[in-house]
Image (cartoon, rainbow, N blue to C red; front, side, top):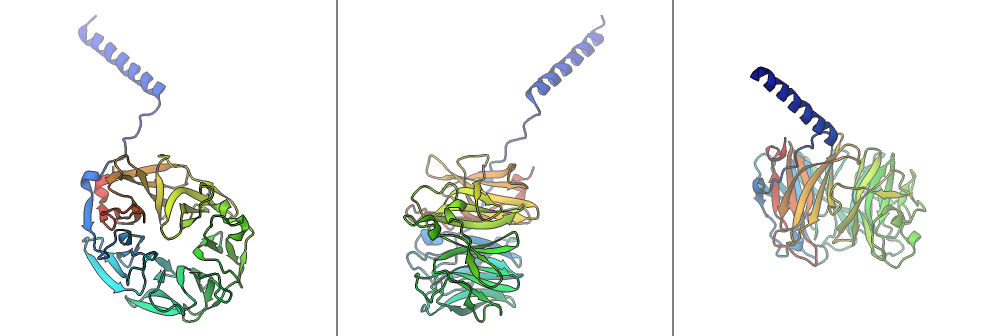
Length: 385
């Protein structure tokens, strides 16, 4: 037999053998997600508050071409707290406006406008605050009756709603509604519980209190807007907080409507919240935990772009730091890790612009980290395949 014929036969046999091995083992595994630790850009830490806890980046919001940053500490009464922003194109940081709050905790984009609820005002407590960008500048509105805390704002059916925290005093109801964009308000239901968040699901608006240890299950339940007032749903909040440890208080955080359900973080504690799991509800009566590829990953923030939900997680590491990951999903069942990085603490919030991700580091009240408040950028080129 000629040598070339033997070579062809051996080659054919080798290809067939490799193909058989490949079929037996299944399709080739995709390449592992990139570790971008060496390519992370640190944009700075602009917050001047002395306490690392007060430098927690509680929320980030892309609006009008810049990413706004919230920080502060309402537990130790820091403040007044300024609103900072970062320019995604240049990475430049700027202080935009100083609020009267001890903590800028949350941004809301409502009816095409950017709002900040007055989380904990340093003003007298006869009225609560909210802030709105109007004609390109921040404007403070001090109009909410008995607004010891304004924990959340929502827009529904042409009305502006406020979820408040008061002291369980009759006459200081904690759900308010405005028909004139916040200039005047009226009581929107008899609830006296502290309402820590609002969310929409299936075309309905809900308000959610915190679960407190030692209270009967139905003492804390979601409330639903019926078109005239908020009414109790008859569902115990515990049913919406799978994974909340027995005997611990906790609440919903980062409520995000996606893929026909409400996805959110289940967290222990109130101001100093810390995640214990991710959950989804489709009817506001019961919820189920969402399983992630890394079972030790703790969810911190959620972000929707079109038909994709992005999730920011942190996995505690043996050295006291965290492995920070960003996942993407289109259906809550299949998750793709975009990238991961090693950090000295967890990233509490994130944003995206042009494929670049911005991360804001944080810490717990009882476990300070000098890295809290650091702002990181992961460029798309660092993780895109």
